[in-house]
Amino acid sequence: MSRVCYGFFLALTGALFLAGASFGESTAFAQDKDKDKGNSEVARIVTVDGVKLNAVFYPKSSKSSSTVIMLHPIGQGNNIRLPGWKTLATELQKAGYSVLMFDFRGHGDSTTIEDDKAFFSYAPNRSFKLKEKETIDYKDYKVVADKYLPVLVNDIAAVKAFLDRKNDAGVCNTSNTIVIGADQGATLGAIWINSEWSRYKYTPPVNAFQKMEYAKSPEGKDIIASVFLTAQPKLGTRSVTLSSTLRVACKDQAMATLLFYGKDDTTARNLAKSLETNLKPSKAGKKYDFIGSTPLPTKLSGAQLLQDGLKTEDSIVEWLDAVTSVKERGNEWVERDSQGALFMWRFPNPPVYAKKQKGEKNLEFNDYLKYVQ
View 1 (cartoon, rainbow, N blue to C red):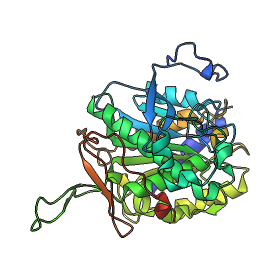
View 2 (view 1 turned 180 degrees about the vertical axis):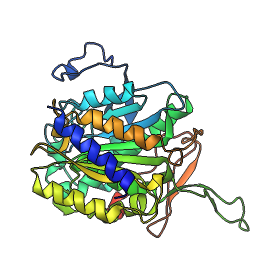
View 3 (view 1 turned 45 degrees about the horizontal axis):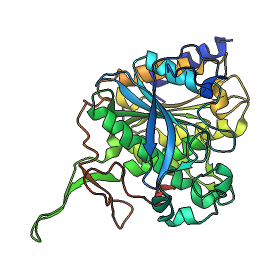
């Protein structure tokens, strides 16, 4: 780690050790002891395969506000009601970021299948039996988690499409997207980030003599940072080599990444240190100074690292402010036109075209296992 980066993380770690929506009156967050409620709106997001996601959007109503996507841990009892999760969202909003947090399918209030036909038209959704025709619960796919969990990346893709529409309404800037994930939510985030570095806008040829035209850069260029709270090298029992999954984004393209872990969690510490070493870009300069790991004085992991007293949310905001202050890092606001544009995943080969008609909200269902390294 460079001196600039090392000094920053050393100061950050020291501060950590010294630290000892308005969503109406909804009971959804009644047990979350938040510092501030913030201004929020319930978002209605339906995935390409017809699952309705429960989401809350914290806007800053500004084209200059970087956009944060929060990904909670996977598993029974995990959702956006986790202690500290909403606090982090509101702290980020106060600091000038637009934020969206949502329940992954089968978690929290994301249990409704709004379009049966769309849902069962995809083979992975037919791999398990639902107890009720129009609902989905984590328990339904827990037994086939190794095969099914990559499907949840489609939830992230649907959230990004929603945010791109918000971008075009001028209330956020998805050209500066930030991913914050905990536990296996972080792992899913890493897989989605990897897939975005293979997704390109394209213009189809109008005749047999014209070549396909691609955008010069993939969509991954707009993901400027990620924060992982105890990222996991597994989905279910399937191994995920995070150093390979994040190589293009971090080592090749210098996406800023901060890895938190509990200092008494030996496994998490070893993984974070290994990723810090393997993902560090070889180039020099401020843009490349923001990949590192930071311990917290606890044996807890994942979203539990947001517990009161650790001040993790303050550290995340401070780090993101440092990242976004580097002029070489940020992107100017541009209209996304995600509903009018055509996309394809160019790698791995053969390319996969995102078959959607103009005006549709989501990309076609993709096999994200291709991006699990």
